[in-house]
Length: 109
Image 1 (cartoon, rainbow, N blue to C red):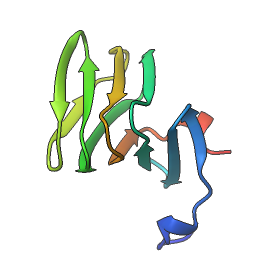
Image 2 (cartoon, rainbow, N blue to C red):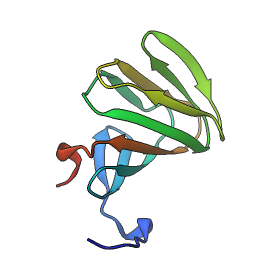
Image 3 (cartoon, rainbow, N blue to C red):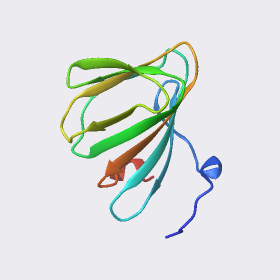
Image 4 (spheres, rainbow, N blue to C red):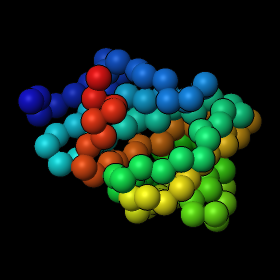
C-alpha cells in the first residue's frame, strides 16, 4: 500500500451525472476528492459508512437527515451511517474532500 498519492493522477469515477470522485484508502479510512459540476445532483441515499467532509471550493446545498444547508469553503459535515443525504450543486464548480470509515468497498474498483 503506498504512503503517498498524487490525487491528480488517481482515476476518476462518476458518482452521478456531473459528480466525479478520486478515491484513496487505507485499512480503516478512505479519502474521496469530490468534484461537483454546476447544478449537478446526488440523489438522496444512505450507506452504513460514517462520512465526514469539508468544502474546499465553491458551494452546494447539502441535505442531511432532512436538514438542508448551503455549504461554502471551510464548512464541514459529519454523517453517521444510515442517515439519508443528498446534494445539489450551485451555479459554479465545487470541490469537497469526503472521508469514509470504514472504506467503501464499492469505491475501490
